[in-house]
Image: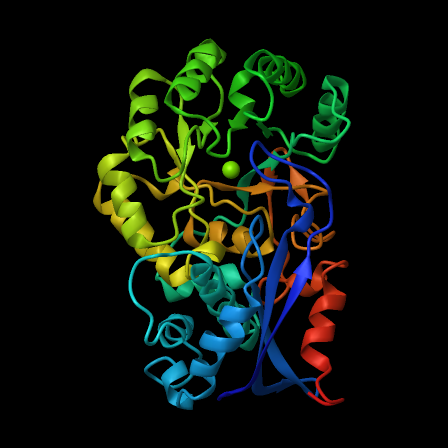
Length: 394
Ligand code: MG
C-alpha cells in the first residue's frame, strides 16, 4: 500500500462578507489530494483534505517543503505499525522534518491539509465514514451519530441593515438551525447592541445567540461589551481580544458570567496549554474552538484534547472553528460539544452536502466513505480536476 502522487491546488472562496477585522473576498484554501495505489472501480482511491476556511492557501509551503518530504519517505513510514493501513499522524510528522518548533503560522494549516487528506484516504480504504475511522483509531466508545450545530453568520455586508440580519437568521431557522452566531466589533457599540437585540428577537432567547468579536477589542472595549451583554445571558462571547492576549481573556472570564469562547487562532498543543494556564478558561463553562484544519491536523488536535482533559476540562466544551464536512466528522468521531455551519457562505468549502439534514438543531453526517466531500456538489468539480488530470493520466 503506497501513495503514488500528492497534488495540491489553491481555490478561491466565494462571497463578499466581512467580520470586525477582515473581508473574506480575497481568501483562498489549499486543497490537497493523496492518490493511493489502491483501486476502486478501476480508479485510484484518493484522499482529499483542505486547510479549513478563513485564512489563505499555502501552495508555496506545500510545494517547496512539505510535499517533497513526503515524496522521499519510504512507503512503510506512512503506514501503521502492522503495515495494513495509512497512519495520518506519520504524514504530519514526516512533512515537518527539519522544521523548527514554535512559530505556528500558515505551516500549521499546510500540514493539516495533508494530514486530513490521509484521514479521508484511510476511511475510504475502510469503506466507512471518517467519523467511524476516527472513533476506532482513538478507541472511543461513543455511538452518537449526530452533533449539536449552530448557524454562524451575521457578517457585515456592504449594504447592511437590521432587517437583512433578521431575514438571514430566519432563513437559517427555516433550514432547521436553532442557535446562531453573529459578528460584533465592526460597528459602534450602540449599533452592535441593536444587531444583537434584533438577532435575539429572531432566535427567541439570548442562550440561542453567540457573538464573535474576532479579536477586535482592546481591554476597555472588551470590558464595555461584556457589561452591555451581561444581562442577555448569551450562548457565548467569542474572541473578545487578540487571541494571544491571555491576560485580556482571563480578565473577561473574571468579570463576565456567561461563557467566553476562544481558540480558533491557536494552532498547537503548546498554544492550548498556554491558554489553559494563563487565559482563565473555566471548566464546564467556556468554549474551546481550536480547528484541526488550521493546526497540523487531527493528531495535534487530539493532543490538545489530552491537555484539556488532564486539566479538568471536558471535550464537550469544544466547538471547532470551521463549519464544513471535515469538522463535522471530527466532532462526531471525537464526541465534541458540537460544530458550526456557514450556510451559504465560504463556498465551495463551507457548509454541508445536500444529503445532510439539520433537524431541531442537530446534524447527522451521511454514510459516504471518508469525509464525504465528493457529495458537495460545488466542491466536486475541484476534487475531480485535482485527482484526474495530470498530463492526461492519473
Ligand atoms: Mg470566530
